Length: 329
Length: 297
Image (spheres, rainbow over the protein chains, first blue to last red):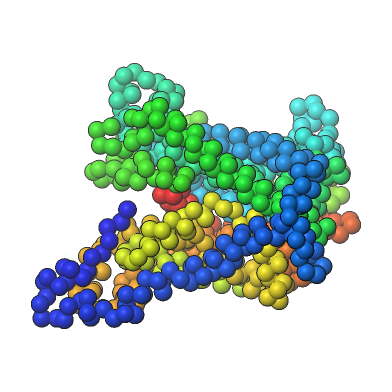
């Protein structure tokens, strides 16, 4: 927390000649802080918070893209949603693609951060190379990977798996092959970004802990397990929360991978955000799409609470680890 | 919420006692050959899709898929680039993206900086509560609001108007949070006190002291905002389909019945190169921004 600037009192004490600052400060000055924050809150309220509230309202109405007035339906949109096979399919695909991309992505990031944490030549080059995928737009990344994971036998991915003796794969047609390819794109895009976050976390672990561990005879690997990982716990939690939320929002990669909101002929890789998009803008049912958004919101909040809840539990188990920075540990 | 847990144990650690930078690296282990090999391979893997898009954009589709895929650039790059620019009107799209990202960046940086300053250094009723609201919304993904946002924009008559893409991105909770953090560390309270004693009003303090001191933080926020805006796809795809930004336009090249993959990838090259240049120039600042945002958030 920052220390507030308490200019008034000190100024009044040191300068008796000038009029009291409290009086000198006009009304306008005292309301200035609100002036500084109001553009943010106005814009954010209008285009960030209001749409969320509006989503809830819309989810109780039948409202068509083409126009017409909203008609109150009560819970009917939700009843429809929970009876929709496509919804469960999309939910399940979101989960599997989420797992396929989040877990490897974070493990790779951790390994990369560990390597980056050594002192080395070309340090900045390697660090900047980590954000190249992040700087590449998802559209570009997906289109490039789409051509690599081409269904034709001459596509790069098929040629590569051919080197180890596998037959060419029709990537977009199979469920798992498509989900794998999408997970590769997601992992490629985010692994380096997360590695930098882990690196920052690692650098805030006091060096003394490593020295103490080394004196006690802990090997590199044991130091990683017993010093680095516990010290990184808050950072790891942070990345898990951010990437699971990101996984529920996945859209661009599967959408452009198969070129459409359907997610393959059988919806093999249609995820929840694509389903919401399809219901809203292909089928024109904005009320129903809003119900999907609300379910998604509940899912996000549940994930965040679950993750923080788990973290609290673990923190309580190991009170020492929660303040690795505290002077004498 | 989550952020609190994260913050709880760490911020002091970011600046350990003594001289942090020297200590941190002096005692650190030297990298072995394995580290260099692993990081070099990773860097190549991270760069490969970009390289491959140039390779693919310089061949014909039949070169790409009949037989061995090419691994080196061919002769057709400028041909395909020209076709991409022509077919998808990418020049117009680049111009629109420049307008959108430029406006979004300027507005995000300015509004988030003054709000961050207020939250960092000024005392006013409701400060904690208001900041809490801003913080809580950090975890709510914008994707959730696109349906009603579309309704709002069509009521305002802004669909296919660049304003519909600019307004929702004009400020971010992350920006406020980031600038508050930056200003509370970079700007000593004494400076504000001294200026107040000398009779400077708040606006004077803001423009003569806060903004100059916050400039490095503002630059980082600006780069991150520009990147996010430039690369955004879902909402522009819905809101400005008929006057597309660069990402929407590039995604649209493939929509034909017989998409020419070489032209598509030429489009991705055009859409990507500006940001790769930005990254090459400001790489260290971006790295700093990403890590600062995470550690302190």
